[in-house]
Length: 283
Image (tube, rainbow, N blue to C red; front, side, top):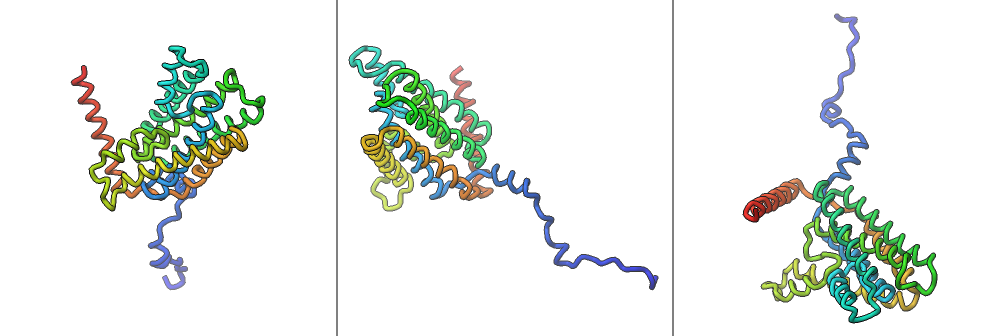
């Protein structure tokens, strides 16, 4: 009909535009995205390695054991039990070793269940670790001076640092960047010098291991000299600030491409299948 009103029709350009995504949907997608294996992720792990060097360099002079170096703690535990030296506290070493294992177990298994590369899991795990290191520094600042090498304060600080270190190592291993463990140096030393490609110009694995050892070495020296100048509380505070910087930078990590996500999922499925086969033969 001539007098019928014609309704406006959307232009072809408007109809081609996708509907706006809900902010909550975008946030959920951002947090659930697995992070990409790139230079930024490597640098974040190196910062965490630097912080571990600081923590071990301060925990040993205070408590005669390590917060994360559990190879050393295992040997020191035997020395203490055999009473070859009176400076090593069995309770200090036992708490550090057991809390480290607990941190590795909980963070590792939760990471396996959730997805070790998911951004929200890395954020949550890193935030909790950082809070623990800040807590250890606070205990040192508010406790008596000089720092008692045994007793409730020692056990509290070692518990916080060891659990945090264990969770950090589990998080790093879940990222499958095995060259930067953020804590254990022995394997890196060995892997560098048994590498068939050690003298090749392009060798990313070798370069990662060397960067890790240099960073851990630098963190240990920094921790030792900060301890000497300002005490362990200040050194732990610096380590906690470094971890906080890593937490803040996690929002800048790029998302892993779809093809890499599928490749990682396939590798994990193959690993689980190999584990099932091995358990059957073991049975």
